[in-house]
Amino acid sequence: MMLRIVSVVAFVGVLAAVPARAQSWEAGVYFATSQWSEFDGHDPGIGGRLTFKPLPLLGIDANVTWYPSEFPSGAVPFSGSRVEGLFGATVGPTIARIRPFVSAAAGFLNVAATPVSFACVTIFPPPLACLMAGGQTLPAYAIGGGVDISASSHTSLRVDITDRILKYPGPTFDAKFERRDDGFFGGALRFTIGAALRF
Image (cartoon, rainbow, N blue to C red; front, side):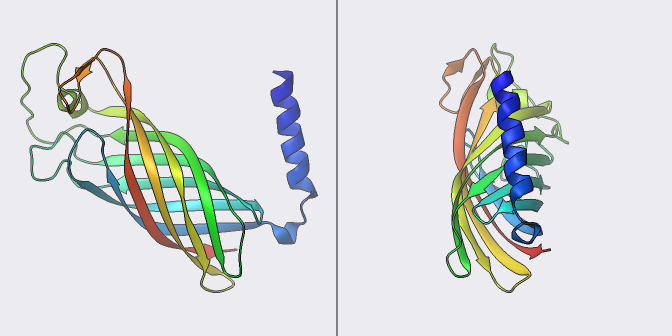
């Protein structure tokens, strides 16, 4: 406990020592497309991002993404829409106007219940789609990287490619119809592209 307190105090001290002119905020919007490890298809969405850069090398992000369409498309959907919140950091140097970075984030994916009738077989444990159809909030993590390009002194373009890792509920049968008695993790591609205003 004492080590955590000392770490937080040291971090706040470092931020306070950074000149205000070296700090910046960015607010942006982006288009997102995500995949699921257990279900086929792309999940398109739109989102907003707020970034605080206490140091040129470090960015602290808060992302909220709304996936408005039913999922999966082309099949009986188990979800009407989804809301994702990811909170994390990026680390990378700025070279001229380009900043390549690595990123890590954690948060949640709220899966709204299906808006249509969803028939399920009466077996135990139920298939994963049946569990998801009633609505779930899944822990979510993202690890990856991207590039931030300054278009001007106050605007930038940003691309992220990450592995989004979801913790699915259990007991259930997964996509390979293997029984999972406990919750389990699955990772799949998440891609975003957007623009931001720096202030």
